[in-house]
Image (cartoon, rainbow, N blue to C red; front, side, top):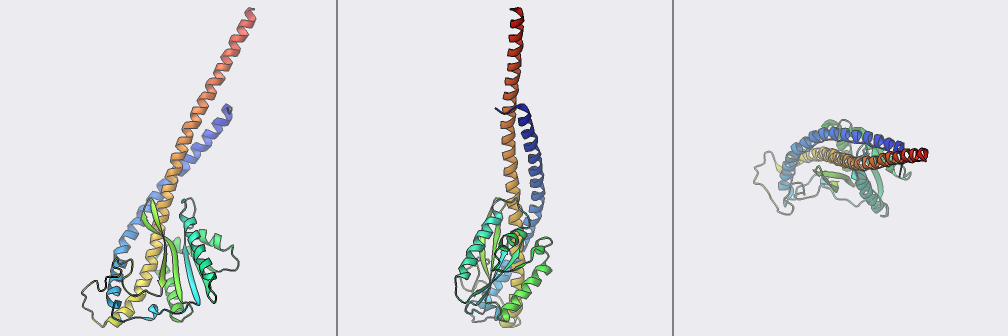
Length: 293
């Protein structure tokens, strides 16, 4: 059994850790509420944009340069993680999926792969692969404004239209609730014809009886870039909400574990203290008996 000093030291250490994890949980809870409100407010907007585009391009044969499907030669993979750790398997799941996509495209002859990381955790891991064409935009998570994210989206759309990119995929965690996230690999470009999974009407044909003014072609030409920017922004908000939910859950579990460990350590301390007192009493009684003898 450990001596009293060692147990006291461990109790102090675990108690300090418990205070830290509890504070981090409260901070994450506050950030989570803001991120959750942001993504919940964004989703109906992006859904309606997708519904309108789906209604136009389903069966109408109308498309834009962003719909162009070409043989794969240049692929862009965007990996969205977090800037900080202590959020459970949030980052490792994304990185594992991203590595699978990297290996998949590397295995295809004639395909060049570029990677953009949004989040320091992805940058730290993927930068170790020296053969990887890697660009980082970790600053987007520090202040995720629509303008900053739309600027990156515009540069990617421009590269796609100029045929410098043939496909853009995004790997990220989609927010479901504070306890779970959905690991998602989403094709951002080219735009897939017909209703998307976001609209919730995949494969149903025309979904609304809209009257279009001006023509469908003009509306689609204006709305597709707007929808792509909004989708990119929604993905970043999804990832942020999922991150804070994962960190809040991880810190709650860490706090609970520390509480259980403290109970065990205090029990161990009391046992050691009682044993020490008993030994002292035995020594005193033994000494007293020896003096009497």
